Image 1: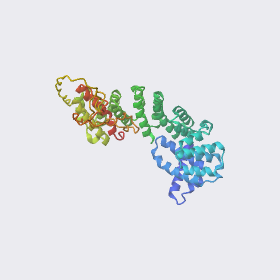
Image 2: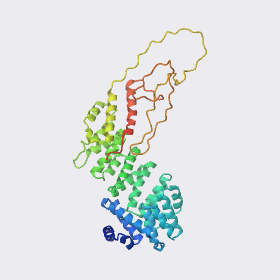
Image 3: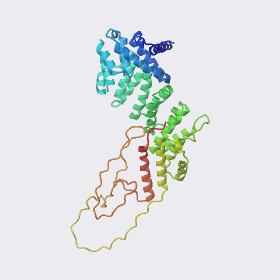
Image 4: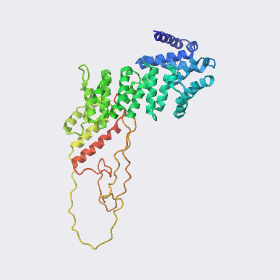
Length: 460
């Protein structure tokens, strides 16, 4: 009831500020800590899925910023106002405002150290921020300030000290349950658990996020981390556990998550996971199946594009309605159809063997060295051969592993036999298998690995 009353008062002030010439009345009528508490209430509503509160958050940030810029040293004699300044900064506030207000305030050394760390954090100086905040224990501070400080410290340490970062994010959640702080802490915990290879922590944080914050406007960031985590930890997370987590989603979100998992798994060659995710995407709920969704059909077909049922796969690919696919998925469909066509294409004929010349006895001669540019087998290099694995960006937006660089190949001697370059040449260090069918399958798999290069953003 108290929160509802505060929110109602806030709405009235916002309307007053927006509808009358005296727009500064709302800022002047409330102390900084009162405005910041109102901002936190709005942010918590947003985390719970109230997207209509987003414009109110923007207006409140504007009001808080104006009030803090106008605050004098007397305002900051109240410790609650200085804590509000720090919370505002860690809520995405203006670093210039925080720095200017701090310079006018007189406060204790610990609060000043927190302020300097927050300013460094907001100004893009993570190293300085870590040093400034290192000796400060969030659990010893008032809960509203300690929760934000734990979230900031956990975010700063995520790369170099992931275990410590997870502990700090747990503290943030403990100090501020049911708030935007907890939503952000859970979301970041998912990503850190993936980097750590901690499947149990990943599953627990994902379950808690889906239970509490699935409708947050930041849930799309969670979805990105969740899909990447399922792919990275596929050997450690059972399909049953994955189904348990997604069963808490509404049917549309569950379908999209499975479509994205199927797509990534197919590209990475995780056929079992791709088949499972595609089947779940098609399955639907309450008797409403998604079997007519062209994305599910495309991703399921991609996972079997090099299998023994290639003719069936080609037939399925031919039935997909291209007009219902995104631009990236149309490129994927084209690539899959091209690969399927290569699999069934008759192998190129082997070059005819020429009869060996009759050996003629010659007088012994000094040993000669191999021709310049020849490889270890003594054969001339392939003209124009290039590496087939350039560095690419993964569908998730992160860097993908690139193949070792292939040095430039020297030109063949003038009297060497001309070698015709293949349509998709292979690196000189990776010769094709002798059997034409094996060669086609090997080449197809490498081409499938490169499909990710053609993809844009994940399907919406």
